[in-house]
Image 1 (tube, rainbow, N blue to C red):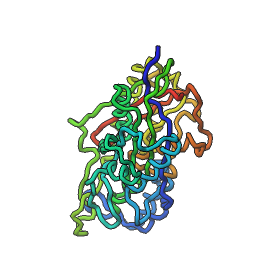
Image 2: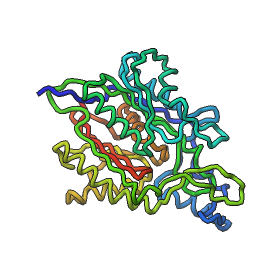
Image 3: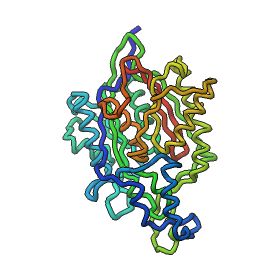
Amino acid sequence: MVQVRSVITGTGSCIPSRKVPNEAFLGQAFYEGEGRPYPAGETARMVGKFREITEIAERRYVSEDQVASDLALEAAQKALASAAIDPETLDYIIVAHNFGDVTAGSRQPDLVPTLAARVKARLGIANPFCVAYDLPFGCPGWVQAVIQADYFLRSGDAKRALVIGAETLSRVSDPVDRDSLIYADGAGAVVLEAQAHDGTVGILSHATRSDALDHAGLLKMGPSFNLEGGDRQLYIKMQGRKLYEYAIATVPGLVRLSLERAGLSLEHVDKVLIHQANGKMDEAILKRLFRLYGRAEMPAGIMPMTVSWLGNSSVATVPTLLDLIVRGQLEGHTLASGNIVVFASVGAGMSINAMVYRWP
């Protein structure tokens, strides 16, 4: 039976050129949450163990003259070129982010107009029925934006959507908080099109949950840990251990639910593209998922990773990972027709989502 499916027809990403290795933080003074400085010599030990704990060796930061919408625009241009479509034919532009445009030297988010409106204007799109809006949904924002676009496309309301994830976490992280070593900048994008197919291709299913009642405060904004610095700005803060426990307790079950909704099982999955937050956490999530299915061994290469050299760029991690694979720029990873890909993410809210996709 012919069905309308949401199919990815183009991908793009923007990876900032500025590389920041872990060693760049050796001269930084770090503070604990109570405003106490870590003892002299502790910084070297923390930086040395950081890669062991997270698998992150370096990350990418934007240049001084760039903001998130600049990265979003570049990723969008590449995705549109990949899809080989006229931007005027887009029905939706959705940009997932959390902090808007934050300029160098400032912590103030610039959210008006929306980043989506800025991207639309800079793409030169005159079509007034190309709806441009932003989606703040924590790190799962890009996956959630794709889910929203899928509803629009399958309803017949739209034919094409451009979905972007862009963030500059380096501009909102507390330099004296050791968690700041996790964060990075970047952008990724896809073009989604409504296509009629006899078989099951494109987006097959998805699932989302938000556990705000008990977990809303695990990742939030707060003052600098340097209480004597006189800085009254707010920075991104997280309760790392509790966030880790929440993620491994909830993400595997939601992935399983999304597979069940697609009528599939873990044995059908070829790739798991998960939010690149922390390498060890992602491995723990995948192991827990396999245990749900009674499987102890995980196939080599099922979970591509970029966190070791790109860090955690929030909403940008998953679409950037996808683009690198599609363009043959992630060694050892490809996608072939018929492959089942699971997208999954977890972040502030706390919220998680998962989506099952069959590569055309």
